[in-house]
Each structure stands twice: as structure tokens, then as C-alpha cells.
Image 1 (cartoon, helix red, strand yellow):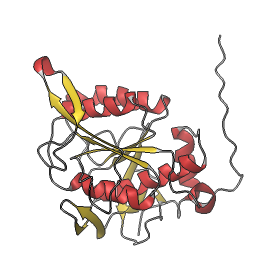
Image 2 (cartoon, one colour):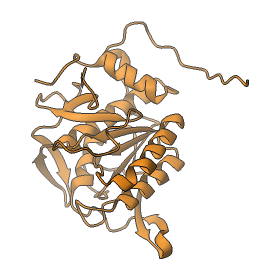
Image 3 (spheres, one colour):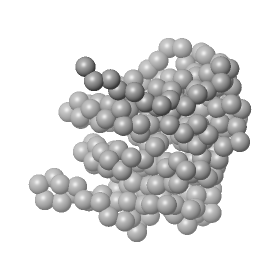
Image 4 (cartoon, helix red, strand yellow):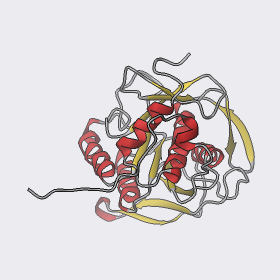
Length: 259
């Protein structure tokens, strides 16, 4: 049997937030936000390294081209702004999979995720999910492909008690909200499938047209974790998704339900 070995970067025996991401700004790490697009000129978001849109062609074939239309509803701009705030040095990429605003097709979401994985983006933020059973198997396979290819998917848990995906897959980092105002406070959950809680209540986020609004929801907790993951990978290059989860857990503010 052929042996597969990889050089795993060493980590200190005791890991806290300072060891995990302290002093790092996410430089050298690409964070892809699958969402409604982005206002690339917003001062709280710029610079945006890449912005892509998807169109469905004949026979259901999806095509990708540079996105010149911007954000369809503001949701993507808000998520991108949080990533930029937490990891100011990262390369920010937008892939628009919600062309009609807050809604989109499961097939388009899968196409966007496949595109992001094939391009090897290190962190993929998914503040969205699908509950359509016909997409679950394909989505699970894509999540595994990302996991083994070292693309880290960070996905929002549904705000309602709905069984949706990909956040329920063990190969992704799943995120819910806590009410604390510390943007770097991550709480590990001892009772998954939601694995981590991050700031997601009354968060100030950028909105198209240069605006700022206050928003609440797991959608906005998720990019907090994506930004910190970018900083972990920038400070400790070469970590696997499993190792990043381990570092997040070790550096969290505790294990249990958020207060």
C-alpha cells in the first residue's frame, strides 16, 4: 500500500487566541464569499480581488464571467465587510449565487461552490443553505472534495429549526450566533451540529451605496469565523481543515451554549 505523508506545520502545545491568530491580518489567504455579490467600491469592503457572476446557459450549463452588476440585495456586501474587518490583509473574492437578491437556485449554489473549490480558494464563506433533498448528495460530495483539497467551508446554521445544508455536514465549519459584542469571541459548542458561535446580533455591516446598517443573524456570525480562519491560515500556513477546527476549538472562549 502506498504511503501518503505530508509535512504538517508544528503548533505550540497550548493554543489560545493569541497563538491562533494574534498578529495576523489574513495576508496571503483568499476568502471567497458565495452570496448576492458585492459593492466592490464600498470603503469598508475594498479592495475586492475578484468578483464573479453565474449565468445558466443551454442544457443547464453554468457559465462564469466578471460581475459588473454588483450586489443584488446587500447581503453579500455585509458578509464581505465583516471578513475585511476581521482579516484586512486577505484577498477577498465574491461569487454571486443569489442573482435575484435573497433567493437563488440550489443548482446555482452548487455550481458556485464547485467553481470556488476548483479554483482552490482557501476559505469559502457560505451564509446560505438549501433544504432541497435533491441537492444534498451532490453538496455532500462537494463538501468532502473541499475538505480533502484543503478548501475550508464555513457555513451558516439556519436561523430557524430547519434541516438544511451544507452546515450540517461534518466536513464544514458550522456557525450560529451569540450576543456578545466581541468580534473575536468564538464559542465552541459541545452539542453539534452547530460547532461554533460568533458575534451575530446587532452587527454593523456595510451595505451597497456606501451605507452602513445594523443586522442580526447567523449569516453575519459566519464571516466573523471566516475572517479568523483566514488569519489562522495566514499565521500557520498549511493547516488542514481538521486542524483549523481544532485550533478554533482550542482558542474559543469556552465550550457550551452561548450566553
